[in-house]
Image (cartoon, rainbow, N blue to C red):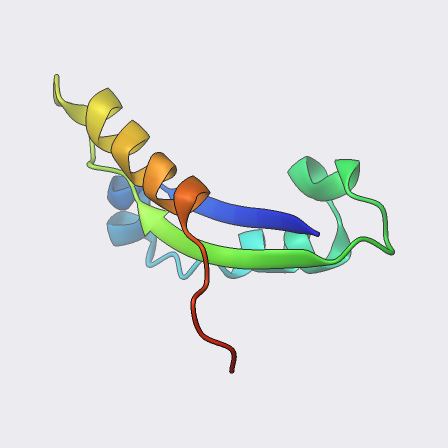
Length: 79
């Protein structure tokens, strides 16, 4: 099972009222970036986060911190 985290741009999200629906549809239909996952492979969406926004000198480190948080996330509860 592939664990998926989506990082979106906070500037684009605010200006375009993005709700990440295109990313979610692409994941479900295995389009674009998600083409590398086979149709039978289960994808586990573990989070959607926004970057720190541009321009800022601290943006790369803030983005990497958020990506690490998603990558290291382990679900502790079953629903």
